[in-house]
Image (cartoon, rainbow, N blue to C red; front, side, top):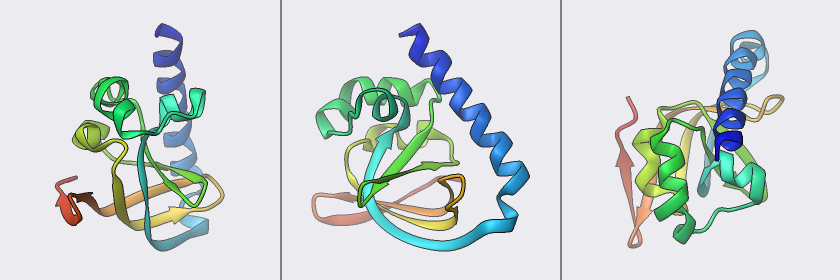
Length: 125
């Protein structure tokens, strides 16, 4: 568990450095649908189910480890307070924002989660 926490913080630090240095040069607006992820467990073990999201995924996100979205087999890291998304890991989501394909990072302006067949906007700011 300690190793995964260290890995998560290292990944978050790397994302923050990359965002600051190269994000502006290669950004595009995106509106994508996919599955919300706990990037720590997804990167290390490929975990992305709702069952995982209700247990370990939620615990990791509440610790501040990075969130992500899996879109057509491609995982994007979300630059957002992951604690706000902890209860939704493993659910279908729609993310609107600005993405950098070079760094696989999305800065969301809006996140909507599919709960029981209806998309609900999540307060992320």
